[in-house]
Length: 230
Image (cartoon, rainbow, N blue to C red; front, top):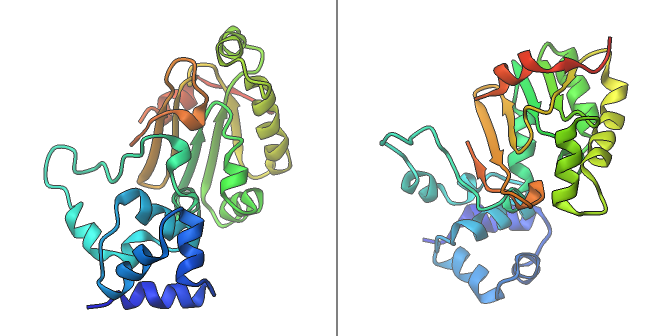
């Protein structure tokens, strides 16, 4: 049977099969088979297509959810991505946008979130004003570990500059959210929305977006961190 959901979502996005194929780097015939034969794409292509269409991949391919159903010791791990940059932006948008009780952003810089989530500052403010607790832990720009990290990364956009960018974005929110800084979270980032979390452990010498992503050290890190604002 054809994949009518994919066909409908494609039409709603005003994209042709060829345009979707070009955006994710595959042949148009492949997209045609996804629709006409309900072919199940490889995970990375499902994520890419869902990201382009702005929907959850499980809506387009519910069979993938059944195939990924876990019953073993790792059943709480929903997905594993090879690197953080391979994660669709929709993952970040759902993680923060769907949270109603708590948002905890514990990345050493987390500056990339403002690129992945449209109007993130406005979203965090609206969440906080609606009663969601929003906590952020960022790195300490004056730490010796930060300086050492910059030596290892050897990138023009330094760690302290990325921290400064995050602080600049967070500053207007100081009346509604809590922000602390610590160097204890270096290379071990966790972003949490209610019961869902994304965790990323840096590989030596790589930038955060090149690091592998896994899915609790948020509370311990929060307690050990120092307030950014008095």
